[in-house]
Amino acid sequence: MIPFNAEKALLASEIRYRRLFETARDGILLLNLDTARIEDVNPYLLEILGYTRSEMIGKTLWEIGAFKDTGLSKASFVELQQTHYARYEDLPLQTKAGGSIAVEFISNVYDADGIQIIQCNIRDVSQRHLAEAELRATARALKMLSAGNNSLLHATNETILLDEFCRIAVETGGYLMAWVGIGQNDAARSIVPIAHFGHEDGYLALGRFTWAEGPRGNGPSARAMRSQHVQFSEDITTDPLMRPWQEEALARGYHSTISIPFRQPDGTPACLTMYGASRDIWSAPERALLQEMAADLSFGIAALRTAQDKVQFQDQLRHSLEQTIQVIAETVDQHDAYTAGHQRRVAAICTRIAAEMGLAEESARGLHLAATIHDLGKIGIPAELLTKPRQLSPMEFGLVKEHVQIGYNIIKNVDFPWPIAQIVLQHHERMNGSGYPRGLVGEDILIEARILAVADVVEAMAASRPYRRALGIDAALAEIKKHRGTGFDPAVVDACLRLFHERGYKIEE
Image (cartoon, rainbow, N blue to C red; front, side):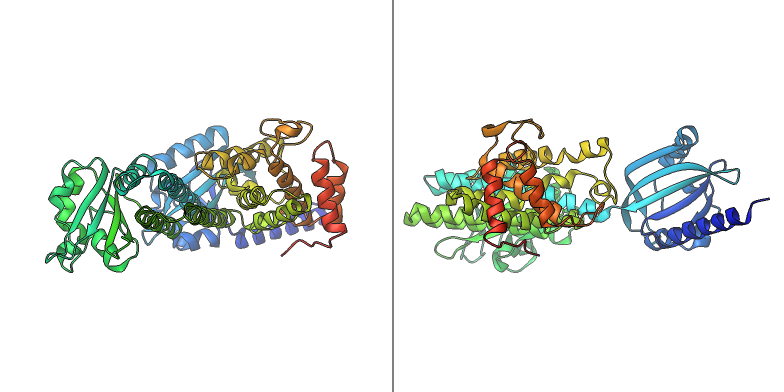
């Protein structure tokens, strides 16, 4: 017989578990280890899949349409029976309505009153996947924009410039073919190709492109010229507006296309059109960056024609790069809600420390932009590690430390006027060589990275994290003072302390 107190404690434990089961914002599925049949399912999983409880209870995973890959479901069950653990980071599920969601799937086996039960925790990671895909696309557009800007600075005539932009679209952007067309004001309002690069194979001669209204004027190029907004076809195979070019496009492996409009200096409409080898979805940030690329192309043509002052030209290009960095920073914030705003606040602290130290204005500008995306690499770290409500294990922390290398790899080939990729890579290095990823020492660490290291620690300690409450600014300043000269640059620490103690600086919300 169970003692009264023990029975009471057991009942309380069961109530707590049931409350967690019912209210969890992760899907929870309980299976019988012997039969593979579903014993229980929580409301959240029913909600995201669109099934009723009665439609799932008593069924095996492979009898439910949600688990599309029946072979994988059966193989997973066999693995669970043998190892009592299974994890899948990218498992596709299908809702009852036919939609698709991506989930992380973690299963463990435990004993419940003599019955072996499998508990499957299912987390919807669709939004994270969208954010990761958006970042990859944004990075692609960023590299194209950067390479295009470099071409603008070195092109000596329009023909070279247009050819270069088409080459960049193919070699840097990964498109199959790219061409530039100019809208004519003849009777047919034809679009004349004047530059192209990639696998064209006679396509442009057969296209008979026009920007007039009508069946042959409904393609992305024509719509872009008329509207002066980016136009695209995500899937040429199924897009009725692409029917006049569908057969020839598919024969050359074109499955998606996007057109970015710009204007010649005399107002004549033009566009850069690119073709992809697979179905593509261009996010709003990527379309905005491609539109910026077209605007730079238009500006560059005008500069070549009018021999405008090169300094003004470079300022225009630099401004477009800064806007691009802001887009990337916003994408990273969407991935890690707990630290959204962290990069912005760190950038503000960096700017003030740089001013306190008398850092050159141009270096301070690059530092601010690097700080704005210093945690870019966290997009490649599993979200559950970034939001875990406890201290990470050494193995988990080792994974998180990879974010500096991931961030560096994303932007290392972008031709910024500042060493942004190196600043991102080095911001966890320490003066005595105890930092990561390379264990750099002292002056081998960029001064911008040394400033960023101090600002990053101060903001992180002053703010709350999933595993602890905010420690406060006093504790943060005491920490950098404690490690002055060993972990942190003494001059940077002194400047930071003056900033808060003497200048009265407060971290913005």
